[in-house]
Length: 185
Picture 1 (cartoon, rainbow, N blue to C red):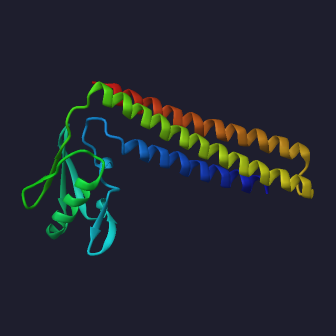
Picture 2: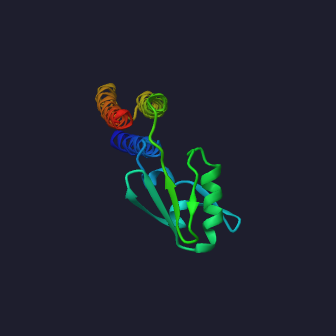
Picture 3: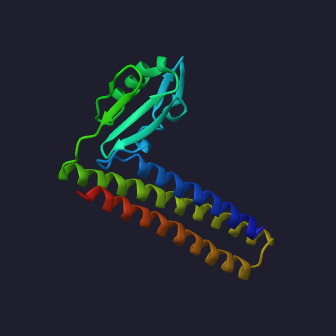
């Protein structure tokens, strides 16, 4: 029972950490990266579809992202989705490809993006702590019901705390890398 609970908590914490890392990838650093647009929702024949299912991506230069739609008839829909997004980049198309040229970030904008990334990291930490709390409550209920002993509960809580600390440390590591990337000129 304890192993199952800890394993379930570890899986949930892994998902929370992964989600935070993905959100970090969507924060613009002045460099072009497919992560900025691949989750963008495009109206494809009445269905909201992620852009990564409709096009391929390439980065020929540091600040240029080229989007190659698999179906050329979707170019207008992709352009509209990019224009309506909060990327702040105007798409240009040549009938077959869409090019996004990212301007260099100002120092103030970099600092704002660092705040955004720190906020996303804190959200991830809170999610992990919530998972720890829920798992701990589950284990305490099991102890009250007599399924596990108080010694087993204490050992499980220590393991759970180690698990929590390692996932939070992982988020902090990704945060420092992203922060460095954002502040790098």
